[in-house]
Length: 210
Length: 142
Image 1 (cartoon, each protein chain N blue to C red):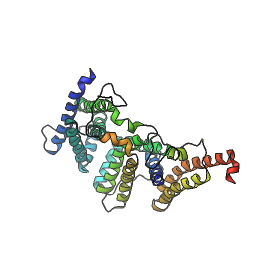
Image 2: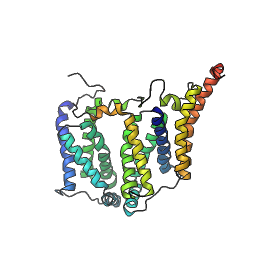
Image 3: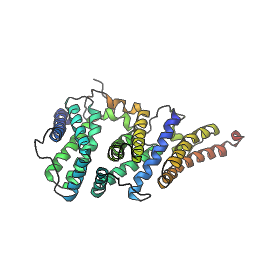
Image 4: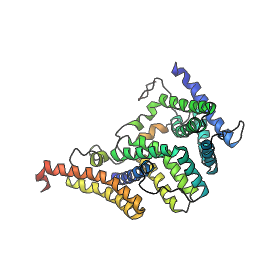
């Protein structure tokens, strides 16, 4: 049943997004929502004044075309989802308009439905512990900086200190004092993990440290 | 190469966590901008509560990066926030302002870290994608 709904859902969402974008740039063909509550008006005016609304509508238009022609649909859906969520937030919580909430809610629901239908395209992105560039099963961030249970030898410990020292130096020398200080506090967490791992190595294999 | 990635990741996580936490538990002064457009935007975001959503995403992404849990997903979630940080710091605050350095740093770190996890995003960028229901984590054979 739902499988049959996917092609019309894709066409409907693509058309909605494209129409919304065109309505902003080439229209208006229908009244653009300006807001009627103080907060809805304030946010819409700020988005318009800062031209961020142009960016959002441009993204909707580009995503609408991509979804309509079914090219780069996974990317377009992922890119437009934050814009659609902001639209729903505006319509539902700020403007409290049933009509706009329904339109924005439909856009979010259709985007979510199509993203679920393309779950296999997002699967790699959802893996809990993938390797980054240059990492291997033995040499990875999580092992050194995030898992305190385990051992790290002297050479690996010294090498793992280098990125921490570099990040700490950046915040110490280049970022204003209070903000930089809090960034340094966060860096104490991976440092503590690294030291714990080195200590476990020393306690378990003391002869290796000689 | 991995040491460069780790430096960037540690640095980005160390930035995101206090930046996100600061909204819920004030740690330092939150800049409100010194241009009419940037001030209007950030004040509207704070007044409407949308800034809480932005800062919650920042905090969540920072924790994921620091603790090593679903880093590619965290980077994707953070990307719209980083883009808005860049937009606020660079075009709105001024291309030659001090804020612009922060904007470029945040967006640059996010994009570079995403490049470091390129294999996680490759399938997302495929031009043709068939939709399946029920949703499956692996593409079914034709």
